[in-house]
Image 1 (cartoon, protein in one colour):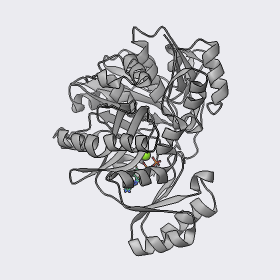
Image 2 (spheres, rainbow, N blue to C red):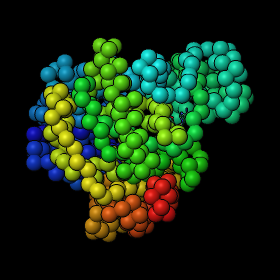
Image 3 (cartoon, rainbow, N blue to C red):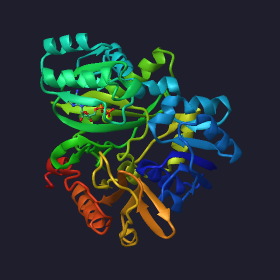
Image 4 (cartoon, rainbow, N blue to C red):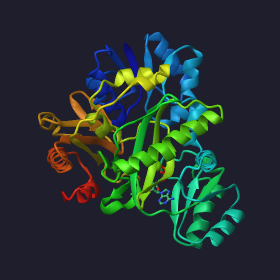
Amino acid sequence: MKIMIIGGGGREHALAWKLKKSPLVSHIICVPGNAGIEEIAECVPWDLSDCEGLSDLAKQNGVDITIVGPEAPLSLGIVDTFNSKGLKIFGPSKDAAILESSKSFAKELMKESGIPTPDFAVFTDCGSALEYAKNRGFPIVVKADGIAAGKGVIICQNLRDTQRAVQKIIIEKAFGAAGNKIILEDLLTGEEASFLAFTDGKTVLPMASSQDHKSIREQDQGPNTGGMGAYSPAPVITPEIHKKIMDKIMLPVVRGMTKRGITYKGVLYAGLMIKDNEPFVLEFNCRFGDPETQPILLRMEDDLMPVIQAVIKVKLSGVKLSWSNNAAVCVVAVSSGYPDVYEKGKEISGLKEVSKIKGVTVFHSGTRKEGRKVLTNGGRVLGVTALGSDLRQAVDKAYKAIDLIQFEGIYFRRDIAQKGLRRLGLF
Ligand SMILES: Nc1ncnc2c1ncn2[C@@H]1O[C@H](COP(=O)(O)OP(=O)(O)O)[C@@H](O)[C@H]1O
Ligand SMILES: [Mg+2]
């Protein structure tokens, strides 16, 4: 089969790497890809918001199945465009992707379906939002309704913070139309985790648990990023909590969508806060997580392709997944200045040395090739992903490998997976 992957980050590199191993896959096209993906797939530059153009590209190249990485094309309706032309594509339709593209939709659905999530209210004007905040008390979380590149959530300690946040989103339109509505919700403390599952709208097939690291600095300090590292499994998700997540969250949300006449197909990703052994939903994403996908796919023992096909054909009930007993960790190296302003075009060294280490895979994010050189080409540059017999081994291996990689201004967190190590008594 000919496969097309949409996206050019670490997640898409991991998907290409995994699919390359499938005996069912003969050729992979990746749009736009990156220097790492180029080694294993044919990369084609394209505007990812051009759903029509991408569907023509798939048709012209005789692509059998397209797999979508990022949320933007999904929320624009790329799946609907492909389906209308009889092309097979993996991911939720525009109607279904609203679970990520509108946080107020997701919150209302959760409320209606009895899914545990912080108490909230939705506003379109500053006055009533501030009135609600005053009555509710502080701290309080202010969220833009739409997709805001991971920057639309502001934790407010007092009324002044809240005034600023509300002003920034509603009046100054800092996130454009994504801020036409805002959500105010209670702050929850606890430990975050990511729970990803495949679903065909009927069956929910969970992937291994994982945990992301959002903040730029160690000990979860500083502004949020796209994700600085992840590991799998996440010991905070005990078998008991796993069951609660399936019964109280994943199955009810898919059923809740069906009740509204929407079939959710693809990856459903719940961003969770675990507090006193209870899972609460902070948000849903409608796609594979980045960087969670990197450690998760490293542990997936089965061929990914039949799972993708089963989702498309609504035959997921017949699929079982097995996960390696090993632990996997991904440490992301970023450009100096990220998540704000950073430079591109720095030469990366050490990739060859790292490729010789057994059990270590480097997934590229923002990289490009120039002649024989590999240059930085984004904020998140690459994710060094290692498999170990336990989390301690995996972490040590990942850091040993990333220490061999150099580029001007390289930065990464030294404490990826520390929460997991502490829980396991391995720190
Ligand atoms: N109610 C909440 N309580 C505590 N922290 C929160 C809450 N909502 C969001 N956060 C924090 O903000 C981050 C981003 O929020 P999220 O809802 O996942 O939006 P997005 O990923 O779209 O930016 C979360 O990963 C979490 O760290
Ligand atoms: Mg999030």
